[in-house]
Picture (cartoon, rainbow, N blue to C red):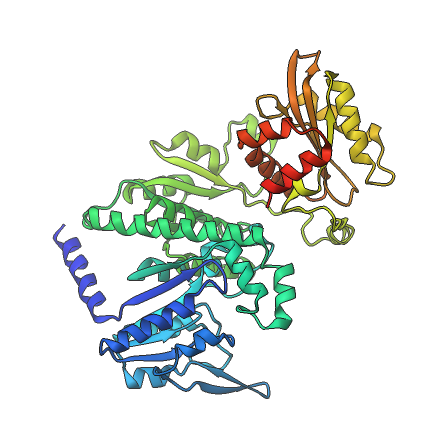
Amino acid sequence: MIEQRANSFLQIIRKSQQGKLKIYLGYCAGVGKTYQMLQEANRLQKEGVNVVVGYVETHGRVETEALLSGLTVLPRHSINYRGILITEMDLDTILNLHPEVVMVDELAHSNVPGSKNTKRYQDVEEILAAGIHVITTMNVQHLESLFDTIETATKVKVRERVPDRLLVEADQIVNVDVSIEDLITRMKEGKIYVPEGITSAMANFFIADNLEQLRELTLRELASQIDFRRRDHLEDEAHASLDQVMVCLSSRGANCDKLLRFTSRLAGRLNRNWYAVYVQTPSEKLFGSNSTNQNILSETLRLAQQLGATVFTYKGEDIVDTILQFAEEYRVGHIVIGTPAARMSLWKRVLGRKNIAERLFWESKSTTIIVFDTRVNKEQNTPESKVKKQGKPAQAAYFDIKHPLRTGKVVIWDNFIDWSVALKELIQAACETVPNLSVESVWEKIMVREQQGSTYLKEEVRFPHCRIEGIPHPLLVIGIAKAGVLDSSSGTTSKLIFLLVSPAEDPNIHIQIIGYLARFCRDDILVKQLLESKTPADAQTKLEAWDT
């Protein structure tokens, strides 16, 4: 106990010798991070603080450049790289001048080869170590632990990434936020990128759905950091929590990077320390002849440290026993493992053998076991998958994925109608827009799905749906039955029907539209108004008004 308190005091001493770090965090370029950072620089300078601008990227924005007037902007250091002169932040000048505060834009930036450090955040760490305070900017997508999440959400691989520990160890984090609509308006007005880059940005990364997901991730990250700081002040640092997180690593494990990022996010949400543990068995030498496995393990352990884990390597006869002993000693409440590399043979099953995951389930006590899917997709990067990707049908321009209700067809029945009759009429309307798509094929797919169980978005709002291969875009038809639709087989009635047929090649579209329709159906007033529509055009006007 005395030793723990001594170490805690040592951390306080070391912290006092370092500079303070403040991060302006945003969800995308153009929200105003640099602008607010320079506003603070001007305020600090007026208070008599010695402030310099170590590096700033204004991207030609007039309002941002105006804030540099009166500030000390340090000249950049030039490096000749392959015959091209590239400028970077001059780290040595900052350290020699030793100002009180330095402004450093774009924390996630990668320095040009030949620089002292590979990454700008490493420059910042040197500045902090010298006792100089740093105010910097970054976007949430550059967090290392969010790499897989960002790629899944936006289909973009973020190349420049920052270890999560910088955000965790920052003394202050400021969320710079604007509405999606205002940000897109600023983009169109040329206030974010130069004119020649606007079209490309608007068509790829800079789309509403991406921005909404990034904004949500930013707010969640900020909430997590606030909660972390609140608990850190409330809990006694001398007492370790009883619910730490550990991840089990293997030198031959697939997708270890995704496993580590998942565990990092889990530990962050739980506000717990986390450990990355590798157990070397007698049959597997840490520095064996297999250089491939050795390199994979080295990279895995390096990434674990970068993500903020405490890394342990053990030697043990039995992997499960070693893991459970570690969990007990370090008060672990959550154990994360990847899926087994191979299925156990039937003969071993007959003999009662169990894989590592199964043994952990049976032998652990009061511990949550999480099996993260680390299996490699067999179709990934194969010639067949490339052909399949290249042959993926393009989405027709007239169907707006972001606003499906604007382009969906509407059918109205004034009189009572049978369910099967209504469904065939909706399918017929859907198939009219796609050549060679037969009503029978869609009907068959819908029936297979209906036999598994009917889907309702809410009471009296039925949702028949399926996925069809080869169609170029989703097909959405809305049926409004003023007198009602009766399904005689189940005795259920409905008044509103959403028929959705989407391309089987892209399941994400199907899921996205389902979520969109579910949000629409939560608006009881609009659903009621829709049922009162006299014509399809009248109904479409109401749908578009809600979707604006």
